[in-house]
Image (cartoon, rainbow, N blue to C red; front, side):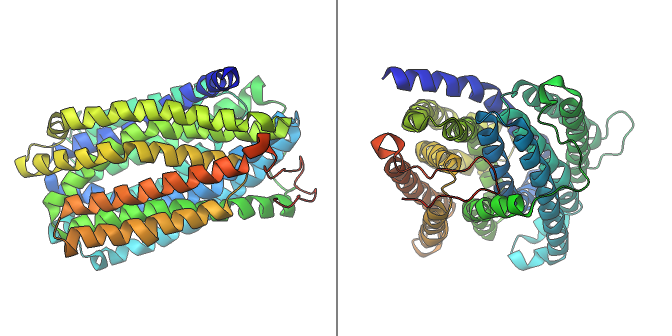
Length: 461
């Protein structure tokens, strides 16, 4: 028990600023929804449609970047800052290539949005917002790489501050560009897109300048960016990142599919979905930030050879996540209608969103448990089996169940959310069982990793 308490305290010490940073990042989406909702339900629905497509693509690229933080943490735990720098350099190039290719694909997809069966009024208003947020993916990716690098080297405070400042800047730019204040034209939904794009470019410049010029990162900052890249490191990052990207795409794809199915019920259902998913995503940032810290701490513990601490790190975080998510679940049940009222002045939208939040309250616990378990497994570089689990949970179970409940059983939008809840519960149980199996016998079954990318890897037991 003392080991659990000690490891949980260390996890929370690292997780605190990361959680605030995640909440700050999500606040940008929440404030966008709040401010767009004042223009009307159709712009809010259009932002939900565009945001769901962006979220799917972005999560795929994020999956490719997660191994950067894992490998940097392991190198840092082993005391090799130069190796950490090499992982960061190779990872940045890989993320840039993936982000550019994906952005071009998503911009091309923007000419085919009519094929998704969304309401005509939503399709009429979704551009140029869709184009602007897709262009903003590159600065978002660069920021995430820099942020993960800083947090992996146990410097999470400044990324948190930069994210909070970015939220404030985004709110100001929204106020100017959405509503036409300070002499600017009232751009409505497009104004929110411009505000997001500008805020993200400024944010990545600030965090890059901080890391490059801070003495804390002098030993871990790449000595040169041109040349010196390692094929072995690229292969290792892709070997871990591709399965993680698939895993996250299965989860993001389920929520994107749910948003598209909501659109088949009309703009009211889609707007209500946007409100409920924004609230659920906001509270999800807490266990997500905790999970990011768990991944880094697990990676560092393996690098230090402290495999006996792995179960205490993972399970201690699960207890904290459970307590937090129960609190949020009670909030959604008790205050669902007031929360929805804050977004839009449409009685039908508010009533449906309040019902969706009750379902969200139920899957909050499972959502927190699955993300902590998945991140702990990534810290162990165990990615293939978890990918299979998420594929089955979200595309083999959640989406078919959502469609069946929503359309065959005529449960409507509520049925779609019950399907999502079923998939999350399945994933949380299976991923936690996987983590417990790999860490039994005081970590004897952990897949051990070499300190250098060029060294041979040992096979899993």
